[in-house]
Amino acid sequence: KAGVTQTPRYLIKTRGQQVTLSCSPISGHRSVSWYQQTPGQGLQFLFEYFSETQRNKGNFPGRFSGRQFSNSRSEMNVSTLELGDSALYLCASSLGLAGETQYFGPGTRLLVL
Amino acid sequence: AQTVTQSQPEMSVQEAETVTLSCTYDTSESNYYLFWYKQPPSRQMILVIRQEAYKQQNATENRFSVNFQKAAKSFSLKISDSQLGDTAMYFCAFMTHYNTDKLIFGTGTRLQVFP
Image 1 (cartoon, rainbow over the protein chains, first blue to last red):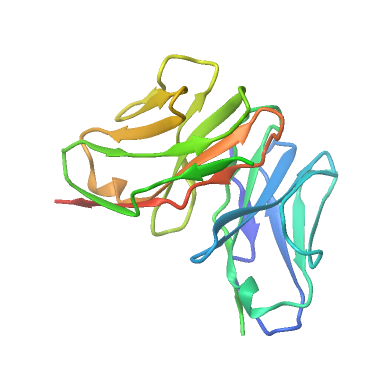
Image 2: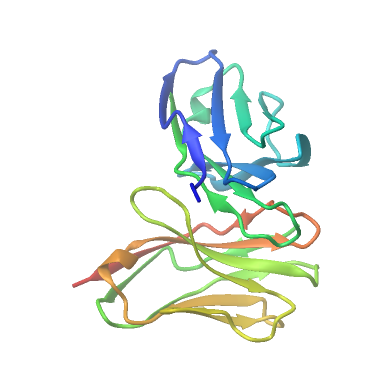
């Protein structure tokens, strides 16, 4: 089975712009979660989608949003980018049942100038 | 709120030796799951091992095993016969039964394996 894929792998944006990141889960997985990893804050949960519905949300401002499509692929959008949004964005997929293991993609590295 | 603490920012071990990474957590939940993930320089997060809180038996995966002490809220990872490829950041993570797919991570332990 193919693993979780994320596109693009690298992005450079300037402050004020917006960005969309994409995540394709493992075939058969219905849940996609997004995490932000920075040196200062570590790994933080952004949100999780299951069957096209946001099921869980972390403590991030409304500039961070996401969605999930009927094929379970997910996108994450960040509007009005700030320097502090520079990070590695990881997505993970699972079957979506209680306690199921999450499998991570390779991440998208976003640099905001 | 749940928290995960990894008190060892960095550790080193010689090839073929054994090393133990520490993790403690805090929760009022009784039903939860614990994980160790490895993040090598490629930044790909890889599952090492998982433990269900309702299981008393410690999980084992080849050279990796855990010491799960539920009363003490401790979840340490033991790596036996360390290999150069074990060099990575190791993250302890926690998930409740009712907040599925929301992992809470510790700050990580950087492990260096020397030849």
